[in-house]
Length: 411
Image (cartoon, rainbow, N blue to C red; front, side, top):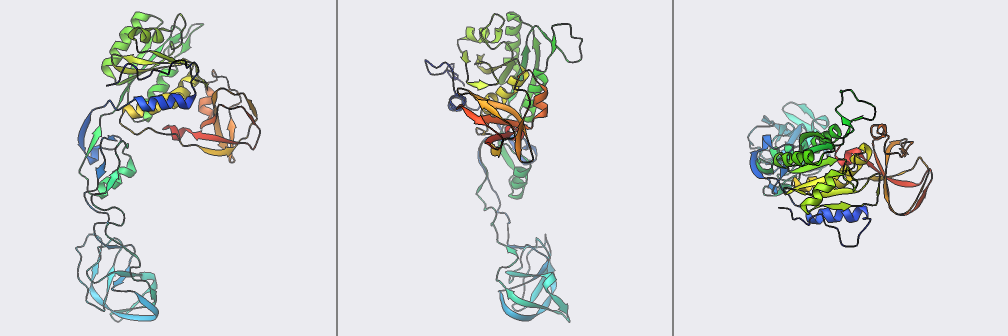
């Protein structure tokens, strides 16, 4: 259960640095989704509630890594000739027994027979008259895998708070795990506010615009592994918005709104959250972005995002994505960026962290020609964001900047 003060900023704070805001969220949020056990086949895409232990070692028995011929012990330099046993070992066969001094045909993945600890590649062997010949040296243990050299039974294979993807599914299956304790998907309600909005496909009158935020945020929730809940759009009417938030709190675990999150006459999101006594208007030193309205509605966290689509997406990626991951039971995700030379010039003033729509071409970061947050096309043009820290900076072509690909934000 989240407390009413979970979004409260320290007293006297007016403009909050980005990292301070993220640190506060990280300290105060906890998982809200329920836990259940599911078969491994149904666990992909879900978040582990507890650490998962291997029920079987991988590989379970010593086996051969190549097609070849197996025998006991290494061989020194020189030519060696060994009698060939009539049996062979293939993947799936129960381990047999090899007489001392003989060699046996073995295929990739086969459990090593008793009496075999070394395999010579078939390309290095000549077979004739019921015997094999090859040239040494051959190191003892060559071309074999030890039991449990990848994972030992009882070892943690997937940590708690990890979303199970294809690699984890393979590891769970390989280590004999039958069921996994996972969290229910986080349900993310998305509400757009504003008298000026119309649905895509409808006829827009002069002064009206199409609702771009809702399809964007619904898809973002889906791509992040959550269950999107479309709560539609609400005009600038406080009672209508109150009713929609009531419905969203019944259907979802977290609510994303866009628009109405500042302190103006028509900023009903912040006004309603203020009535609950949980609202904090976060003036974050970030560009693009306006103040974020954060609070609780019937115990469900609300992230009041800016109405401008560019600012809404940037703020959702930077400030809403990590908390939603924690609410879903995941560990806090840190976007992984890398330093690349700039292919642009900019005289950055001190005081705000800036996120520029960017992409990498020929090893350098290009930025969208306009920083105007009304230029929605820049979101599609870009392949990520360049993050410029709060300090003043004179950036010229070749200056190293931090580029964060969209994929690092989960897109």
